[in-house]
Amino acid sequence: MEFTCPRCSSTVETRFYGPCESCRTQLRDAFRSEGRVVQLAEYEPKMNVTPNAVALKDD
Image (cartoon, rainbow, N blue to C red; front, side, top):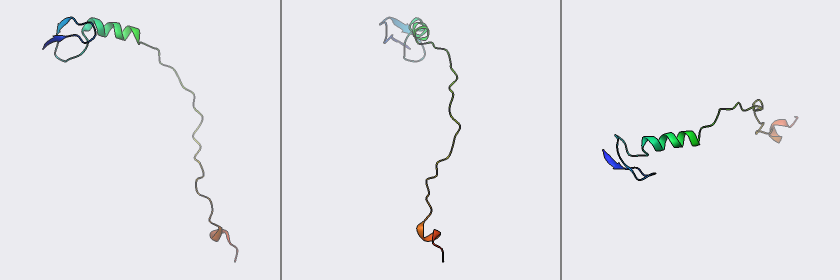
């Protein structure tokens, strides 16, 4: 399929619509970043249920 590159407006012939190969390479280089390890606190479930006053009532 032949179309114009939406980024640089050059005519390219590829299977799918999108940036041409040179634009894709430039974009990969511009937005490349290294992965990082994120430290999170251990999961502690919340106590959302409070005891009912009737259930706590002593007979």
